Each structure stands twice: as C-alpha cells, then as structure tokens.
Length: 131
Image (tube, rainbow, N blue to C red; front, side, top):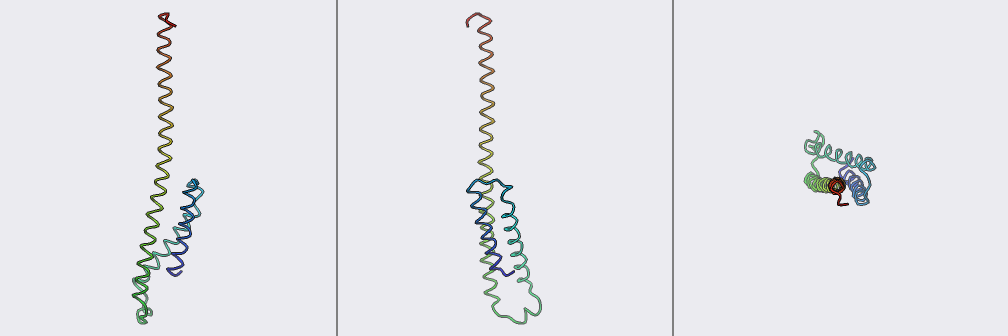
C-alpha cells in the first residue's frame, strides 16, 4: 500500500470510531473499526520504515525523495494526532462511565446507611415507648 491510501483508510476508520464513541456505542461493538485503524497504522509504519532504508534500486533512481519524506512526515503527524484523539475520546468515555458507576454505588451505600440509621433510631425509640 502507498502512504496516501494507508492514511485514507486510517482516516475512514478513525471517523467511524469517533462517530461510534459520540453515539455511545460499546467498546466491543467497535472492534472491527479498531482493527481496521490498527492495520492501516501498522501498514503506514512499515512503509515509513521501508522509505527510510530503501532498496538499492530505489537509491539509484533518486526522484522525489524529499517530497516522499515530507509526505510521510506530514501523514505520520496526522496519524499520531488521530491516535491521540482516539485515546482521549475513549478514555474520556470510560471516565464518564466510571463516574456514573461510582455515583450509583455511593447512592446505594448512602441509602443503606440512612435506612440502617433510621431503623436503629426507630427501634431505640420504640423500646423507650416514644413511637
């Protein structure tokens, strides 16, 4: 694959992931988009590695090496930004889920504690004949 199609594939998968996270889909539902994005990122890294150390025949026909290097560098920065943004969005979504769960657990514990305290005061008051 060439760098442009790798970036296009990764961009498409990234947009699908971004839309899925925004829609609140579960992480397990997004595995196909994640695997597509990961494959494109891996392909791009392999192309970058080959361009840094090209074969002999490619070294002899120097054409647009500077253009290729600039294109690879720009696309690498774009893919790194997409990776960072994807991680931030996934982590933010997981933090929101954790906060909701923590709130629910805290609410249940508070309710149980309040019920126990009310029950103790009720029993204590009924033993003294106040209720």
